[in-house]
Length: 221
Image (cartoon, rainbow, N blue to C red; front, top):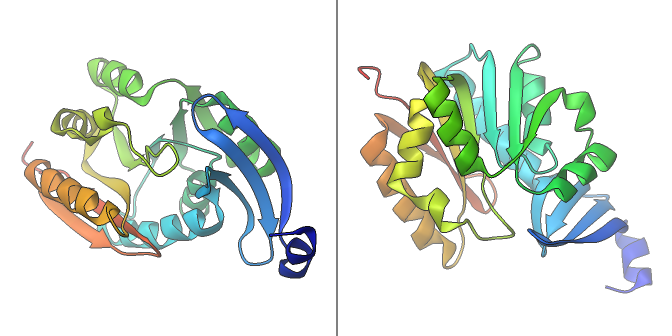
């Protein structure tokens, strides 16, 4: 799209930067989606990604309206954190993100500091294992581990999902984000199958080109 096309559509590129982890990160402001961050062309925070979380968290409130402590695995620029804060104003939020450049962009453009999130810049697997050993528990856990449009294999395993379950309060909820188009459907369907082995109930929500798995812990455990 040329400069004229950008002007007519209201698209403005605020910043572009190369990340060793996420590749090309682009911060965009447009009339349709407002300010959002894309990694190699896929929206990571804000814009359509924020709408996806908004729809999903409405369903979470039906399952568990009392949420005091939240963990976000894959914080990105904190678009999801903003939605959580709107739903539960006094909630304590911890966000884990491996890419410090994404955090910088979130603070600069996405209101990350105003969202009052405890930011941990670390590999999510290391964080989850450490918190499991410490016996930490959360009422709500968001799992959004995309790098571009791909999830690292270690976050697609039954062992990872079991670790996440151990971090969940008895009546807590886990929300797992998966893309759901073309070849991504098979991967998402496999995730659905795996989650049903671990959690007592898995509800599916289909916002935009995603499927969100809302998982409730087996209350007997």
